[in-house]
Length: 231
Image (cartoon, rainbow, N blue to C red; front, side):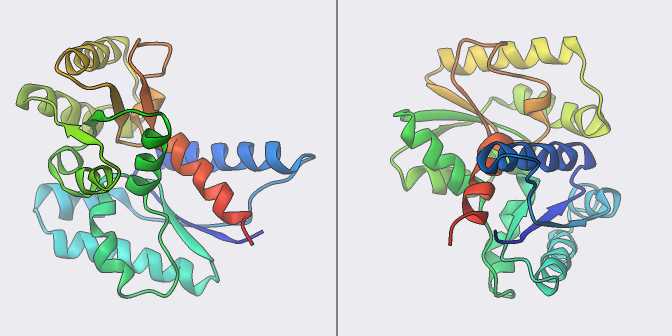
């Protein structure tokens, strides 16, 4: 089994979900009380948010993630999994400065959507994720179109993640608004919806909507286990 290098802390809420799910999948795969060989480097989210959100200092934000990647590399991890969607925008730059591969969340998600034979998806997440290019580019390579929420929807999603989800707060009223947004996106042509923030699947599940949803947390964790077990 390969050692998984996990970058967490963005937030601790989703990192805990990653750790649990990776080990649940590994135990199911291998049986008994098997667990993943995993090394966790947890970033201080407050420092990252201060740079990326409050000051718009992507240089410092990228350096924070780079130092975490270098740390797990020094710990002999075979590859890196980052329990955060938005910070994946820094992966192309970071990959040039490390030797071990990143298991990119957008690439694994795009493959799952392609396997589901879906040709258009909406993306929910932090503003940088919804407005960035790393998801549309990954999806386009597989012939999948991306639909972005409207401005008011983006603001609600972004703000609710920062003020509630990363603080481990999950409200029924917030869930109801997400469900409404997903239904509206479906009406506007989205055949499926990417839950492109690793905390959103803790709020919204497939039981809440009639539209196919793609939990990036679940997809990414399953891909990590497969990579760890590949010789």
